[in-house]
Amino acid sequence: MKIDKKYYSIAIDGPAGAGKSTIARQIAKQLGYIYIDTGAMYRAMGLYFVRENISLEEEDAVTKACEQVDISIAFEQGEQQVLLNGENVNGLIRSVEAGTMASACSVKGQVRKKLVELQQRLAATENVVMDGRDIGTHVLPNADLKVYLTASSRVRANRRYEELIRKGESVSLEEIEKSIIDRDHRDMNRDISPLCQAKDAILVDSSAMTIKEVATHILNLFYEAKNK
Ligand code: DC
Image (cartoon, rainbow, N blue to C red; front, side):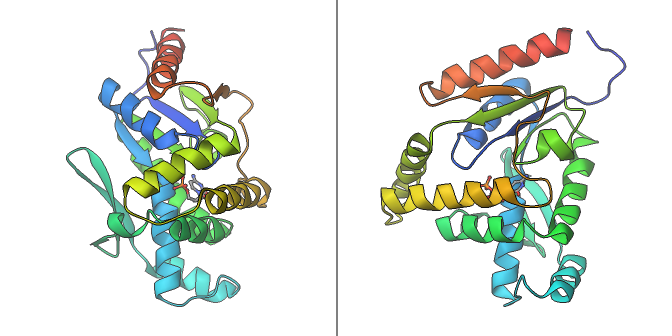
């Protein structure tokens, strides 16, 4: 058992709809760690650019916006809330459009720098399970466990479809799958910190696994890593 270490961290990366947030939340609860959803931070930034009518093409405007905007998080009953200039925007960032806006603004270096700093600060003061696209490769390169969680695009689209239908959004499965494939393409091919499996990350394909099976598997991997 490592005894020289202050805080533990688990990094879970992977494409959209792979089940990262569901799994990360469960694992965090089980371990008594904080679950940090970094995608929600990019979604809040995307919302800000849309609200302020700032074009992502305008480098100076994007830089200025990143200097001015305040993104922070708080917890309500253990659930992360994202605050955009103090306003809780959790209820506004879950749509397919918000995901697309988030992906679009996440290619900008200024945006990534700002949010990565926030994420690293959080992990420096808590035991965390953090999910995103660049956690194992960039945000927490020394994480105690790195997992690359994926599933086929059809399985991922189906899961997202059911989640959105449950929330009352009217969406088509084909459109969701197309938007997932487009989003993955942009996230995997951007210049800065593209989505990829870290060299030391363990690949978990959840296509044919239940949530419980995936969570148990990752917890076992963590206990093994912790006791090494
Ligand atoms: O995990 P999510 O679907 O909420 O993420 C929304 C978008 O934010 C995703 O398509 C890419 C971006 N993102 C990122 O670039 N880096 C992260 N660590 C998390 C999300």
